[in-house]
Image (cartoon, rainbow over all chains, first blue to last red; front, side, top):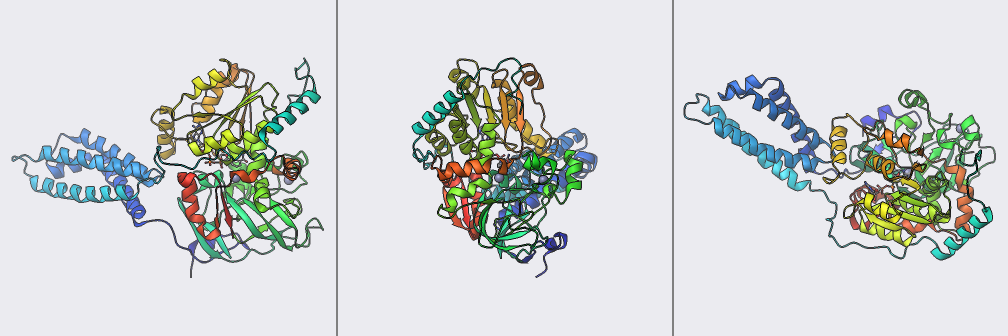
Amino acid sequence: MFHFSNIIRTKGDPKIVEGGPSLKQPADQLARALGWFSIGLGVVELFAPRRVTHTLGMEGRETLVRAFGVREIMAGIMSLSVEKNAGLWARVGGDGLDAAALLSGLTSDNPKKGNIALALLMVGGIAVLDYRAAQDTKPRRPPRDARRKLYPNRSGFPKGIESVRTAARQIAAHAGQNEVKQGDERRVP
Amino acid sequence: MKALVWHGKEDIRCDTVTDPEIQDPRDAIIKVTSCAICGSDLHLFHNFIPGMLPGDIMGHETMGEVVEVGSGVDGKLKKGDRIVVPFTIICGECDQCKRGNFSVCETTNRKRHLADKVFGHTTAGLFGYTHLTGGYPGGQAEYLRVPFADATHIKVPAGIPDEQLLFLSDIFPTGWQAAAQCDIEPTDTVAIWGCGPVGQMAIRSAILLGANQVIAIDCLPERLSMAEAGGATTINFETESVLERLQELTDGKGPEKCIDCVGMESHVMASLPDTLLDRAKQMVMAESDRPHVLREMIYVCRPGGIISVPGVYSGLSDMLPMGAFMNKGLTMRTGQTHVNRWTDDLLRRIEDGEIDPSFVITHTVPLEQGPEMYQVFRDKRDSCVKVVLKP
Ligand SMILES: NC(=O)c1ccc[n+]([C@@H]2O[C@H](COP(=O)([O-])OP(=O)(O)OC[C@H]3O[C@@H](n4cnc5c(N)ncnc54)[C@H](O)[C@@H]3O)[C@@H](O)[C@H]2O)c1
Ligand SMILES: [Zn+2]
Ligand SMILES: [Zn+2]
């Protein structure tokens, strides 16, 4: 089988013959997709807010759209990081804000209310994905109050810790004087 | 052979790869009998250290039996020898090696042009680490090619189990060097941040080197219990104030010696706002490390004291209190470990039964389960402290 990574191997180093299974779950792939989507949408909102407000018939709300863009980008970066779970929950929260903002534009005199309804539908669909991904990428760190094994007998000193302490004290006594005198270079490595 | 291969962030797989071959006369090949996962591997797992490429074989704590030697190994090793492989590849001949500064060997980094650019000067080649340190295939595998094998090895006797010897490759000398470079005196209090495997070894080393009091800081009860077993007084930073407790335990004067066994991925907590800011900056690549522990150490360390940093930092750290550092007259000592500087002495201590480093092992599993164990070790599940893999 062809493995791309073999091309960049230093000559003579082991190359992959057969790839083993990856522990990445579908939820991890979904988180990645949502992360990039978030960044893409954020960039549009940040740099072309007028396009967005125009499409939705919500002219005048550009600053809000820009702020939402920043939020999207941050949540996207987080969803792509090791803390993807936090990023995905941030997205779920963001979906709520998006929906609220859209609803506020859904007035009877808005000629583009069809677009808003469509956008609401989209936000709803994506919120479901965000929520599922957030559920499925829960950090697997045990909770603080989880039952744990403790290791009170693993001193690492086969002769016991007291014997180590006594030995260390004796060596120190032999070494004698521990005060540093003027000009003493002992501290210089 | 089977090997644990890096494929990207949080994606390590047990792949079948071609066997290593002798590439240079000074090479040797070992059949790995035991290897381990290190806290440094977690930084790579998270892709926090730049310069990893898909297809890189992980692992730098390895031991085994020599099965092949190159023509230039010069009788220093022969087939059948049992060796522990130090994680730093050393030539034994350059200026730095001659001074015992093995982790900054000038010869062994085969991609030194990268390191020269990023760090100003090259450092030693490392196994299973980034391409900044040579991109050498690592030892979480069935076989390992050991470059510069005539110098890069620790010969160990038969009759002592792998588990007691394996950590001569890294964490035992790392904890030891961290304590040794503190110049511990019998009246000293040594405070140690992080009770992972490196912290545990640093605690034992500080006790062996005669510290009056050792204080260990972490938030995981299982690791704190192990620290206490090794003679430390413990502080749980999630439930207690580190600053207050350290003051209390030192009559308000602060510990003379502070050791950072945490490194660049300090725990992120809402109650420690600097860690939140660091994490955010890390995400947008405005900072590479989370140096919370360095800040805390500089603040609590007794004036004139020493700060020792075995914890790994990769690039840029913000907001270090240089004012306190300078005015308090502190000294900071750092470094990847000069493994072979310490291992003769440490091997003797193991043989004499002074210390048995296997106390830290909580999980021993076949190599194939390695990818899962990265997750278990990272998530601190199942009270995991140290994982040993058996190919
Ligand atoms: N210098 C070297 O040659 C060398 C060699 C090996 C490992 N290391 C480095 O040493 C460090 C520790 O390695 P390890 O194997 O013990 O890793 P580890 O991840 O198992 O241990 C780190 C410990 O630090 C604790 N911690 C996190 N934030 C803390 C905080 N704010 N205060 C106190 N404790 C905190 C964690 O709970 C954890 O127990 C890593 O950075 C690793 O890369 C350096
Ligand atoms: Zn290591
Ligand atoms: Zn050298």
